[in-house]
Amino acid sequence: MSIIIFLVIFTIVVVVHEFGHFVIARKNGVKVEEFSIGMGPDLFHIQGKQTKFSVKILPLGGACLMKGNDMGIPEADETGENAEEKDGDDFSSKSVWARISITLAGPLFNFILALVLSIFVVSQAGVDIPIITQVMEGFPAQEAGIQAGDKILKVNGETIYFYRQVSLNQQLNPQEAKEIVYERDGETYTTVVEPKWNEESQSYLMGIVSGGYYAVSPAQMLTYGFHTVRYNIVLVVRGLTSMITGGFSIDNLTGPVGVANAVDGLVDEVVDTTQDYGWSAMAMSMLLTMSNFLAMISANLGVMNLLPIPGLDGGRLLFCLIEVIRGKPVAKEKEAMVTFIGFVLLMILMAAVMLNDIKNIF
Image (cartoon, rainbow, N blue to C red):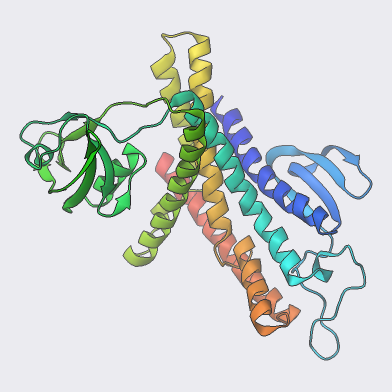
């Protein structure tokens, strides 16, 4: 079950990404030569008027192959500058803004998928609204005047929508004093909580507990769906920032093997917690858990693809932006060299991440 779910999740995320490229490419008059689901030889295909739609034998990922999309820019002429392509349906013949929109479409569709799934999860499971249900005796939160029933609005200036944000802040900055803005009976208060060491849990604690998830109105479902996507994006950005400022470590990255292992852990957790409640409860819990995980992975892929690394969408966007600033494209040979080097380094990194994931599993 874990393998099947992983293949479904990975394929959905990649196919939605490629479908974004496909839709906007067609809108801009670019010929898509093949849109495929999976990898390897064709299992079967349908030849459309312009596009070959195929399902590959390996059910993993997908691709959108556009005409003239080797580097995304025209061939160089005898002067060394980039000449215009003759075919109007060629990717490289389109304006720089058309190419930017086509390139951005993949990550954008990942964010849209994350939003739709987040709204679905919120509508069914509710929201972990940051309402305090218990204040532990003798801990800093009680001494700072926080009471059960208070709703946390801000922590150190960050607007709080979910209790998981409070937990994350404490995990990332365990000893740091927290300036907390909270609401009680319609009034707003501000206090400072300094976490203290707890021998029993072997961690720094503020001494607050929030209980469960709360149902929200249909209008709030959309709002909290947006905030969920934003939260997932912020998580990725914070992770990348900490890698840059705190030193790069291969352990900070996870590839398909690590994702598959995470799916396996989630499946086991759902089965363990719902096996006494029947198949319907287990199925719904599995659907919500995997939808939430898929939303997180989709948002993650959207962000990672926007990094200005040659071989990713962000790398192509970088060259497009340089073209906008210069008023003319970068010479094809230069972009080809940079992209090739970036692609090789990316493949080496992916292989290293995969080996590290396998090592961590065993």
